[in-house]
Image (tube, rainbow, N blue to C red; front, side, top):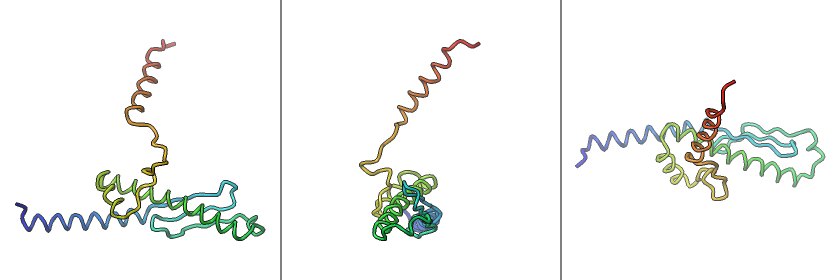
Length: 142
């Protein structure tokens, strides 16, 4: 049976960890730009706008199209900020607790999206590395 003192200590440790999560998320940033170079946006993981840059050429753009472009670029920047925050949290608290934070927030990491490219597994990376190093080792020295 766990003691009352141990339960209090666990609760305090969790409270401190959650306070650190909020701080890490506040530091996270995401930036994105339109492919045509007319809009650049930087936001934090809470959605606060830190930078909005518009090219001079947008003064002649259709306002509805420009508004839609700004919102789309902001959405992409927000996804980057969200991922950056989870990356920072994972480095601090570990992957398991970060997944718990994702579940509690209702906002999964963009890298876990079903349509995201999963990249290379650790095993694939090690195999490719071994092949590269093996090729280098087998080449005669000049």
